[in-house]
Length: 394
View (cartoon, rainbow, N blue to C red):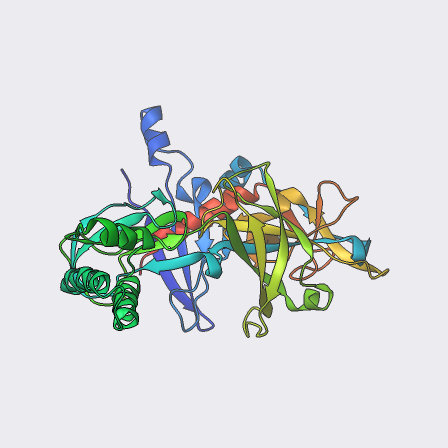
C-alpha cells in the first residue's frame, strides 16, 4: 500500500500542513494502481498553527474528485425579521447531581472494613447497612451501655435512680454518635446481645454511584466508603449567554432534550443562576431542576435546554440558516462557511429555534447574512476534520 505523503511549510508565521490521503484500497480492488493520482482522489486539510502547535484544525480543502464524491451544497445565510419574544433559545448543558441529594457514606469512628454490603449501581434504602466495620470503640460502647442498663435497673427505687438513668442516656448517646440505629440500641437494652461489627448505613435512599474502598481497608473518621446519590431529581447546568440574562427568571419553565433519548423531552425549572460570568465564553451558569423518577438522566450526560423567553415585542433582523447547516459537537454548535474554491472553514455559532420557521435556525452571533454555508455534506466535512486531527504528525 502506498504511504500518505505529508509536506510541511511555513507561510506568514503559520505552519500549513497538507495531508494527502491515497485511494490505495480502491486501486487494489481494481487489480492495478490507482488512476488520477493522489491530487485527484485525496482530501487536503490545512491547519493554521500560531504559537500553539496543538490548535484545532478548522479548514478543509477538497480536490475536484473528493468534492464530487462529497456532494457539497451551499446556500447564502439569510436575514429575516424575527420577533425576539417568540424565540426559544437553545442552550447547551450537562446533567449534574443535585448537591442536596448526594452524600459521602463514611464511618464515624476508626476501624477496619470487615465487609461491604453494597456495590456501585445498587439502589439502597434509608438506614440500610452498606458496610460493616470492626471497631474497638463500638465494642466498648456496647459494653458500657449494657453495664449502664444493668446498673440503672439495680438503682430503681433508690435515691440514685436518677443518676442511673443519666448513665444509660450518656451511654446511649455515645452509641448514636457512632451511627448506631435506635432499633439496635433498643434490642441491646432488652436482649443484651452484642454485635461484632458496626453497621455503616445509608443516610437516605438512593443509588451507590461510586465505591471508594475495598474490604480490609483501614479507615479513619470521615473516610469515604461510598458516594450515594438520590437521582429522582437532578440539576442541569446550562451555559446561558450574557445577552439572555436580562430575560431569565428563577422559576421559569424550560424544556430539556438529551441526545441519549431522541424524541423524548423533560420539563424543568430554573432553580438558580450563578452570579459570576465566564470571562471567555461570556455565559453564566443556570441550574435547571428536573424530575428524574425513572433515573434515565445520569450525571455527565449532554443536554440541550430550550428556554422560552418572555416577549419583548421587538422584531429584529436575524441571520437564519437551514437546520442541516448546523453541526453539533458535544456542547458546541458550528457551521461550515465556504471561503474559497472547494475550501470550507468551520465556524462556531450560537443557535436559536424560532417558532414559525420550520426547518430553519436563527444564528444570533457567529455568522453574517450572505455568507455561503454548507447545507449538504457538513457532516462529511466534520468527519474529515476529525480524521485529519487524529492522523496529524509533525
